[in-house]
Length: 287
Ligand SMILES: C[S@@+](CC[C@H](N)C(=O)[O-])C[C@H]1O[C@@H](n2cnc3c(N)ncnc32)[C@H](O)[C@@H]1O
Image (cartoon, rainbow, N blue to C red; front, top):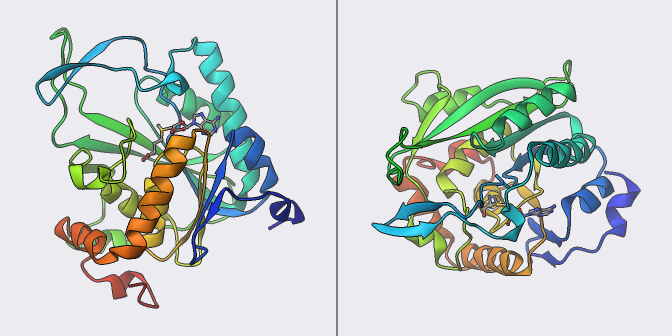
């Protein structure tokens, strides 16, 4: 970590100091961290809030997520992605890797920029949703997937890949790059709703794959901090950056809930056969 790290004042640090949040623009905060993170997970704006309609639980709803997600021109999306990914690259250690989730709205821009910035692309993971909403227009296929690009900072430095753990999770067969998970469950929203909250199980598997117990993990668009909850469940430290106060508040409440009721989170992950044997994944039992 560089000296710069200490000049920033966190908005929130948990009592166990495993969960830190900075409120602000990630393009201002990331440059304060040079060669710091082992893993960055980013779920940047998809720019799909274009006043369109969708169906949720049988009801017609607007696709708009918030002002942070308003539709932009392709050039603006490219410029935005270039800026934050350049900052993220500098904030990664040389051995670090990045996971970026997206849909067809932004995934091409993200992939091209990673290649231009000389990242080494490792995988394109497809999250297949087991319960996608139906297509409203009936003019094309139901969208039922999101993609996650996994890339490492350096062409030559080795990245973390927990091959054996992933194999074990897949019934002792090599883990493939298509993962089936249901969309977010109601119990994950008890501390408030984020419009694009990711399922915790997806983040747990991603972090098990690409980080170790002593890894420092950052999410520059942390929203409700699903990444931070997954990181802490696995005994890893987390730094989140988020612009909006309402999402900082949800993040803090989720961390407090985890501190109070860790067993509930752990049992839910066990139901999904993700953390059946925590000792296997963590050297010192976190719970
Ligand atoms: C797609 S959501 C992330 C949701 C998150 N993965 C979760 O599970 O809750 C993107 C988030 O990035 C935030 N955001 C957008 N632009 C930002 C920026 N420049 N710096 C920091 N946060 C930003 C938005 O407020 C939003 O909460």
